[in-house]
Length: 168
Image 1 (tube, rainbow, N blue to C red):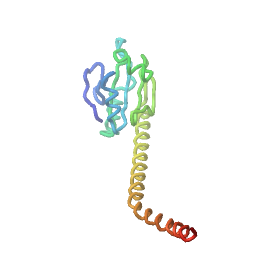
Image 2 (cartoon, rainbow, N blue to C red):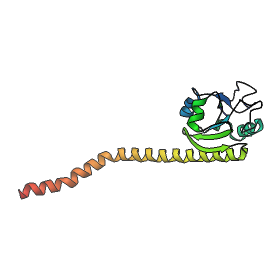
Image 3 (cartoon, one colour):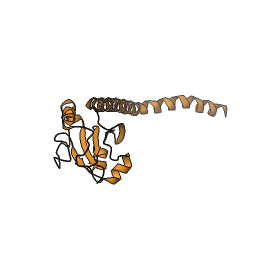
Image 4 (cartoon, rainbow, N blue to C red):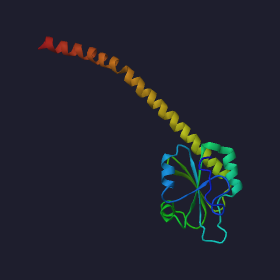
């Protein structure tokens, strides 16, 4: 899992994700080619309530490895992100793909739910990539056939023009 360092052992999970804020999470979402799992929490309590435990982050890392990025956002300190994604004091886990939210969970989240959402996002991303490649191949084929099409157009239009010239 990318972005594995933690800025604070009390605020971020021991393994799995790095603390992000208003300024740097949008950049991660924009540049990431892999799905991004974002956990939000509110640190205003004595013991912040977390949506994913350290064990859940570890399981995500073991299951998905480098195919996913992990991020943690403290909603009290990052009000812009909290407002943009509707995050408040109840912990939430968001799964992003292509910069868009593709799954959203609230409260204590089972890691199986997050794994299923990330796997679905990975599957959809593979399908989209396959479709993109097919379109590129079709475009290249059209480009290769362009001279032939041009010659056929000249041939099919030539008799009409010739017939019109004789009739005139």
